Image (cartoon, rainbow, N blue to C red; front, side, top):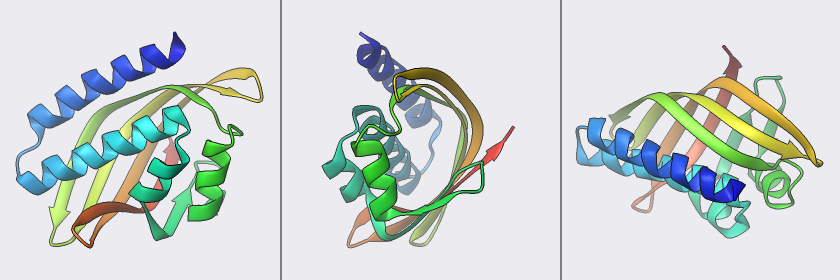
Length: 143
């Protein structure tokens, strides 16, 4: 049931983000953000690997930084378990083959069977690799 609630939040966020995106590239990047969000809720190893650049630098608000392999493993193994993710106040800027996305990130978690909440700001850096948008960098910060 909790996963269903997460999918509902993704659908609402997708509609909101798609409606406000202007260019084709901005819409593509917004869609990539939604693929990432769904993969994080589902713990989908393949989707996480496919959406992430091999050079990924994934920064947490605590200061911890992960590479692609660590980021994927922590989510896919369930060490970091997102029950819901809600993105708000999202902006997308595209310049050539690079995009910057900023949003507020609110989530319900269940890490190690311990329920929790997350409320942070996030900046994502996306790069177009072989025609597909890939997550190159992520930095979270406390609000």
